[in-house]
Length: 120
Ligand SMILES: CC(C)(COP(=O)(O)OP(=O)(O)OC[C@H]1O[C@@H](n2cnc3c(N)ncnc32)[C@H](O)[C@@H]1OP(=O)(O)O)[C@@H](O)C(=O)NCCC(=O)NCCS
Image 1 (cartoon, rainbow, N blue to C red):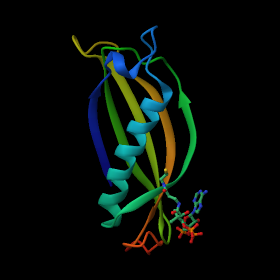
Image 2 (cartoon, rainbow, N blue to C red; image 1 turned 45 degrees about the vertical axis):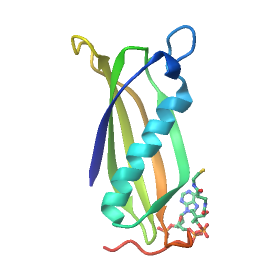
Image 3 (cartoon, helix red, strand yellow; image 1 turned 60 degrees about the vertical axis):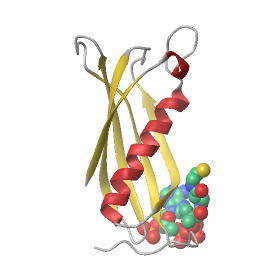
């Protein structure tokens, strides 16, 4: 199961040097990762863990980000999602590169926030 979205980097997402904040990028990864997990679980999910996140190349103001999330593993109540962030210049679509990647774990929950099994 997969989810993807596009997001443009604005100055409010960046430091005065024009580099995107890591927390902004991780927030996007968590958001799109949860979409993939909800699609697969067909239930609400919460984030239980954010694994190792690698920032491989800088993301700058004016970059267009494509966030791609894929469910890699389904446990009893948990889902492990691999998230990749590709960047390219918004105008010209040049220099597409894998900028960031990481693994996030979600747990399917009921209305009280208790873990519930994911259907196989
Ligand atoms: C997520 C939460 C519901 C799990 O509750 P819990 O009582 O610890 O649940 P369990 O111990 O039964 O574990 C549930 C599943 O999560 C997995 N899990 C728990 N902690 C984990 C961790 N640190 N890393 C990876 N997986 C983890 C377990 O292995 C289990 O997976 P499985 O059912 O597929 O085998 C609870 O910890 C919680 O509400 N956390 C806050 C979530 C939140 O607010 N997230 C937003 C961040 S601000």
